[in-house]
Length: 82
Image 1 (cartoon, helix red, strand yellow):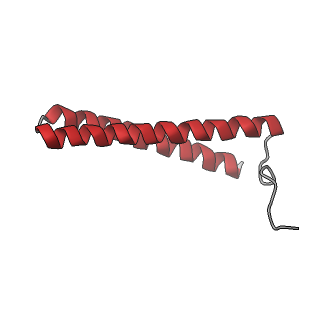
Image 2 (tube, rainbow, N blue to C red; image 1 turned 30 degrees about the vertical axis):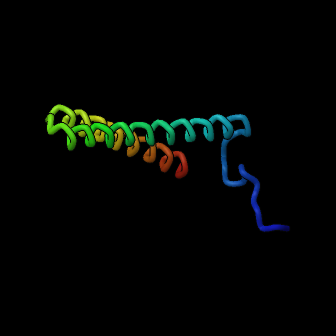
């Protein structure tokens, strides 16, 4: 035995559901990264131009990104406990 586990050994979902969940996590990770980069770009525009609206938009995007991430991880934790 090589010490490696099967990908779904800890998963309580049906095999088809596991692939869906893995795809959802991958999509969320890319969306989260894109939103963080968007927020960083808006803060860079604020630093370059001094226009307060870019800082405000950056904070709004960052706030909703962190809120969505907290909700997503809470769902993962609750799903793991159930």
